[in-house]
Image (cartoon, rainbow over all chains, first blue to last red; front, side, top):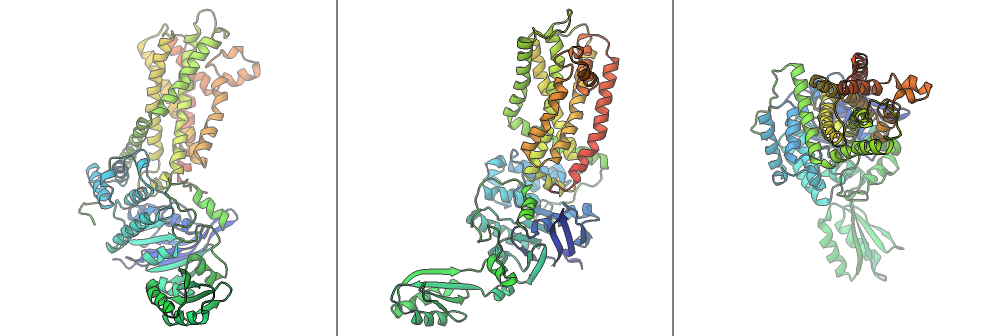
Length: 345
Length: 270
């Protein structure tokens, strides 16, 4: 441990022509923690990660990784960081083993160490069986794991994950989350960007909410959820049922006052998790109310933004993991990232 | 999380690292070429078509003088055409790496900045050498014969072609690193090659062209290289063209080498 934070960003600025991607971004990530950077497309998340990973020069401000200025001494930063982007950056025509060996050699490991490390990582990421197959035959989740393995070759102290589960199916996403959680247990500091509140909630100790190149809120995910009111249970009841009675049942189990929408025949109440569902259903059954529909509404990035800024997180893909745009297809073009930032801001 | 000692091998000079990194990249690109043999086949079919079309379709109509078979005149031109088109694969490959996010990964590694480009261009050189060998066999099959020359001169002819190929790989690298997509590298990399190849001595004698075109055709790199190779393969005065060709290649490398490295260092997105 050193007395430096793992990542320190102060007043970071970056523009592309007239478009401002970062308008004075601040971040502070303590060693050994997971920090989530939460925001919609175009918020500047990718730009910030690219600067921290020495891929992009900033226009102004301060950016340090483990106390080293990334703008002045990128060559000292590179051996100590790992980067996994939105698309798996592996060579499709090489096998999993060949990919990791190649990156190991380029990290200046000896041939023997590079090979041993590659085998070790493939084993660890459940890719040992696929080690001899070309990466183009891998599924989206496997490719992403291989990409993550590549960024872990040097067991970096700081790992940047730029939307690590975008485009993955729910099962691959869960697997990815487990892998990331394991890394953190081993002491790696992780800076993670995501559009999904759920993902930040799963993984991050602290979260910075970013909008148009600035941090608009910072704290634990619990802080955030408290601010936006947590989960909400919506129950629609059958025609002719007692809405008032249903509201009383919900209010008993919820964490706040129940609201009634008479037109939709819907009763809503803030709750803490799905645990009370059985209790509510039993209660409604006892007073003879027939349930037509039950929905547990988890707060999304949209809700966070609605609360913090008064406008939604407009771009598509903010509906939650596995929402529109999520597929398990081959990775798309990498160069599009920053263009998307430009368009959607 | 690991029992391995992950300390990088440190006791090596900068140049050694540069070469080792370039070797890793070169090996990777050659493995890719080997695994997509279709590309190599297509890269060979095109010049073979040129040999057949020109020697059988246009050959009779193109006058190269009484002492020379057209196929003997043609083959050095086709060789040079083949390597310049082959060199354009450098940019296409780099653009593809960029599109797949690999360039970003390489740039985040502590590897030598120029090794990616050196490795790629060297791999394309090996690939081009292989295609030239195939083309030589095709040429011999359709009647091409070396003229009044020596074995060292013939080897020098192939050497000139490879130097030429390597120089144009760097032009292609600049294009590949500057465009935003593989498709753009494909079209942008080819357009300017056509006038260079056709307004040259590759397929017809320059003195049969209109005067204004001769001024260009006489001095451009394809003509001097084709003429040098022709003289080395068939016999005849070679010194002037050989020196001019090497000067062109040297100039191109000096200009486009640093430009390509700069394009690689620069932000890929901006």
